[in-house]
Image (cartoon, rainbow, N blue to C red):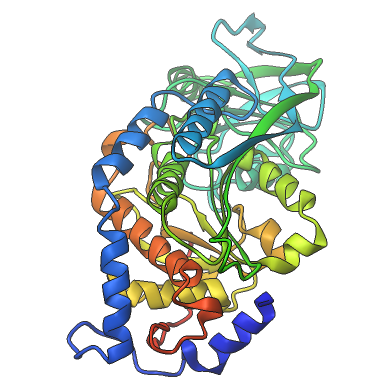
Length: 457
């Protein structure tokens, strides 16, 4: 049955957004009891220890796209899928990375002795000017005093883009940024299109030393970025497929994904080893589960470079595959102890089949999950091809986001397991033969009411 028909069935009343909120205090209706029986049988197979142990293994070191660290993760993920019995393929693709060239700094005509990382992606230039410390470079921190000067900025709290844009708007001619408190190294960040000033990064100790010098004297700095430019690198998607029972094939496809790459200086325990572990766990327990639907479990490369892997995968889908793909479930950052509650984000802020199923599964497994509006993850390319898709994530994000502190000790087994259970119950609801296209009201999801939550990431 085409996905449009599935969505119409849900809209017709299988998941009723106007119905009262489901609670465990209420006696379950017959169809809800049937669902609980199916869910309990399915989700009790999900192991918190297995989920946690995979995060441990994957987060031993960074997995930046195009590096050996990423390829080691890809090799492990592929081997896991194959051990479960899936037909598995590596899908290579090329993306543009940045070669930092030869950055340098001088301070009062003395060569800077520390490491310098190219922060800019759009200009090769050399500027000399007085140094002006602007703290975290929020709009309140930056004044006209930075006009014609090189801005010294501390990393943290707001985005790289906003920091650079705030000083650029006030007339800064260059940027030196130093690392946030508790972070090591200087390999972070980049400028954006239109931010055409030389910008470099140094470590925290060196940055604080410059702040101290500015307390007692004027500092003249020279920032130079030379020979920087784009280079081609290779990343990979890992795709595992299982076909439905041959006598019950309804022609539909469900995809479940996460991204396996991390930022350059972070081990990425939550972002997104947690999501990868969830995908692998669901693949493991569904490997021997009869379905009437083709299942594709996948992990994407180069998400941190601009959703490159998921866009590549979506571009390879034929029109027939698009028409048969009824749902995409994306798990990104599902295990942090320090983040907020689970939410389902869609790019347009509208409910769809995935959020309906997720809310209904949440009501049966834990609690109703609300939805909101956000792009910025691998559900976007599916949405843009007309496939119902949603991102399952905890928000607001933890303080350790995109930092070297995104480590295993910040992972909550409870959050990791509960999110995997909710996504698994939603996928199973759609894929199991007892609910062909969710037509069988005896086991269709009970009506739930879930609200839009204007929650920031």
